[in-house]
Length: 405
Image (cartoon, rainbow, N blue to C red):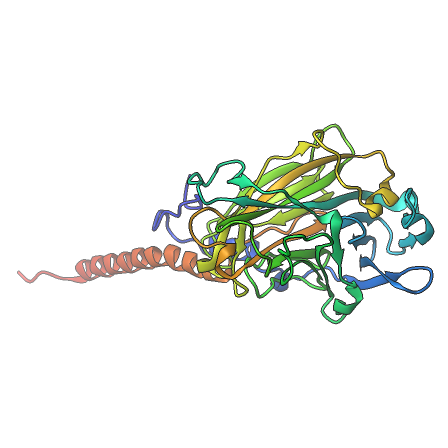
């Protein structure tokens, strides 16, 4: 497999300056190589009477295209992804239709013929499992299931109160409308949306690499009373499919874990062939606000499958844009295991993912790992060079020596 195998072979080949230079260039951060500029805006769209509704529009514009992300907590939390081939496309909202029992046509991106890609994600249910008597970390389900919380039956805050245009951020925060056991009396489920105007990484792990045309979702469950002593939580995610197959799920592996310690994997959900849309996440969640290795929880993702067993709760924004006759594929994310840290430590759980359109950002080797590679490749080379010089000098000294008879 050579020097660049997954398991690094120390001193397996001689140094090559051009090899080191090419490694540095291919693994250099986006900030060193330059990037396209985007004008990114974030706004809450008010209804016809000027009242703020929970409809958040993120718009990323470059010279030739526009990306639209439309987030809403009307019904279950959902997001529309729409990419157009013009910098002048715009979102049009018909509030009378959108808030009606038949919202078809209530959301339109104009001009319609500029749309190159469109899809949606809907977050439908919050799961809870009792893992007290479960020893198998890979068990499905990971314990005795409690009745799930339907996110369509949550009451959500006015998103305008959390809107921060300066950092392109807003938060949907909710709790069940019917909570007879008062599990959420002191708790909440939050969906924090973050857009970006340039490439980089957030300060908090898992520090997913983002670009200026992506947005991040951070899901936080905090303060809610679990129904078991060692409850595990999960999230059901539904995605719109407009073909005969579900989107594909992929795993990528890396030798670099500087940004997410002990996590060498990146998961991707891809809609159709590239470039289209993608969802990226690392299979890790955290049980403390200051996430670190000691509070890291495994995140298990189930395979995608068509939803046939039960009807999904309808999202008005998805129905308004795509119509009422749609097929959905679902998958489940489960956070934690029966052993190790868990939600029960501080009644806190945080997981994040990246959403975008076009080619997904590619995790590259960090400067730390590049430095280690340079030392690993360079040290044997220096030793060989020094040895060669010594042999050359000794040969020259012997050739100049004259024997005296």
